[in-house]
Image (tube, rainbow, N blue to C red; front, top):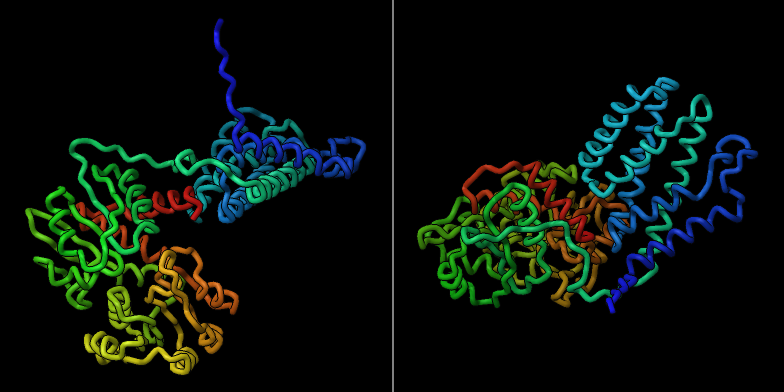
Length: 468
């Protein structure tokens, strides 16, 4: 007797079925079931494309995040605009020789716009919506009614898909989760890279770097390696013995690595901290990309530090790199830390632009009231540390225009950033800094000038696939 294997019904199937049923039922109470007797747009409205939108959303990202949900709506908006603009061609669209190239151009335009604004998850809807609007055979004024109905249905479907994704749990074991859409090929010639830290398992560097490595066709693989505080020297020996081409370092190893290098660049020398190490011919070459990465991220936020007054919290390796970069860009920086001696030592690197201060709430409030930018370079609020700011009332003293930056990127929004955004301040986490310094680090590892835009697009797509 032949044994028949019955496929299991997974959560993806269940969620899709629930979403499709809900999409249909939302139209029933209003009698919106393609009733030609209704005037205008209502006569063309029904649940079909709402159900299709649910299926597309569920099958492309079951664990949909808020960012991905927003991307779907952006895709509908972009596609709707492109489709509506194309409808101006009128009855000429009824000719296949016109319709076919127009469809191709519309799809390319939708994909290009979504990639341009950094929303790859929007691409599907940006292509589907205008195609649905154009491949109808409907002419005249009715074409616009039909198009409007399709957009309405698709918006409903996307909203239902996002709601179902958020409401129903995902009971899959972690090892059976979704594929991340990124594959790194490992060969005998593949060279190893990694990030070290304590803690470090929260790091997104492997996601960023492996995505860029794959997109650029580089023969490397990037790993995550926990190294306890005080063990950076032992790790150097292990890394060289194990054949690593290099590694990145996060807290608390940046300053510890500096004196262990055979050679350092000017950025590392100025701040006395290393976050990128290349191992060549048994020698260690240290670099610091934090400062340059932070300035590029700040520019993305629309902030030019020249002439600005900055309050910076912390005096570790990242703090020093950021402070010196800001000073070099023309800002006046006040560095706040509980250990006065450490703060004074940091500021001694550029006494004309850096001023030491304490960490008392009264001091922070006074400085905040005079600041254009506030930057947190401490580990307060970082995932895995269990530490938080005891008092964030100094944020209430900031001028309305002041920007707030946190070099922490896990969690995506610290309490500091949440409070800052609630107060209406422009704010950014450390993801932009991480992204920019990651590209610079990979250039050091490979010794090549990389395609920055291609690398950045790959990294952002990988992060969005991760739900970041």
